Length: 443
Ligand SMILES: [Ca+2]
Ligand SMILES: [Ca+2]
Image 1 (tube, rainbow, N blue to C red):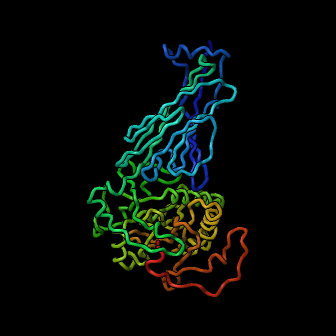
Image 2 (tube, rainbow, N blue to C red):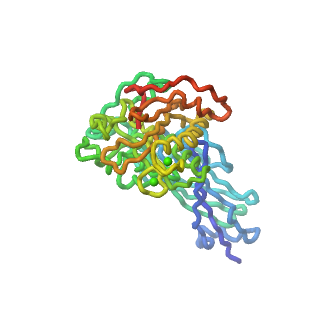
Image 3 (tube, helix red, strand yellow):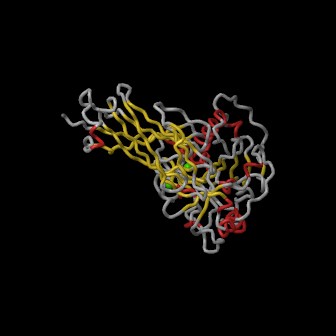
């Protein structure tokens, strides 16, 4: 009998819930050179319909609507999530922690699919019905590898046997109450915040869960262009005088929506012909203790830092575009210099569009944007223009640094840069006013 050579394509289909965008990672190479031999394969050998060429017949799809990854997935909260095996691809649901796996098979084949999942990092994985698994993250958080094995029997159980394995890694956050005492002390106290603009006070509650960053998992990719460690406190940019924050173990808050928003910004840059491998991230998470210390620095080390920074909640990132890798914002507007106008160029063409879409879709990505001619990260040289973006829930807030080095809100921004379909308004009288400490976030 002619050997049947089968190629198994493992297609990790990942979707960012908030973004509504799909990212596809195709893993090839799981070639199965021949049918297995031995008792197990006996019943599966000898396809009744002759050799079957199945280059695209079987695709195992895994998608998650948490922040996703080829390698790692952030799981929100400590909630359960489900694995569901179905013959069709479904669109993301609303449950931010659900993870579903799908089996997609060739319509001409009679097949029987057997799949199994197992966890090697704690938590519990329970079979809750045909094709349905429910996973509960480990109580103390941690990194989990969920291994998956699928077998397809072709031809009424007497056909080819096709199997493959893959795994997804999940980064499960640690409940605040389970943090080591010295860690929660080092992170510091979250301030009590009243409703600010359109952001409810509930947004400023102390994070309920934090991700544990380790030397092992900081390099894990959590989205196509970002790794988990991109969002931690950058040890290189802290000083020996900083309050014991520049050391492991490190725990950070991180909104999956923030990662999704940065991915959308990269997509927007690509649409303008600006291809980047990642964004230069000056800051992701900043603990309250770090922020307090930074404010006390004054000068370069904290002149823009305000009281209720969205960085403390894992909802903000400061970034620049750096295709030439010199650590400085590229000359985006082509005027020959790198300054705040290049940050504004990105804001007006990319970030505004992402926020307008977020406003329409209510996808959780809407947030503020501030532009800077330089940063205030101590000891981080060279200086560079940069942008702050966050996912605070509404898109209106815009600010910039004026010629007197004062951070000002830009109330006229959306009148000058209306969202698509909105009528441009006549410019109002100057609405520029200094940002009030404690109301607006910085950096
Ligand atoms: Ca550059
Ligand atoms: Ca420029």
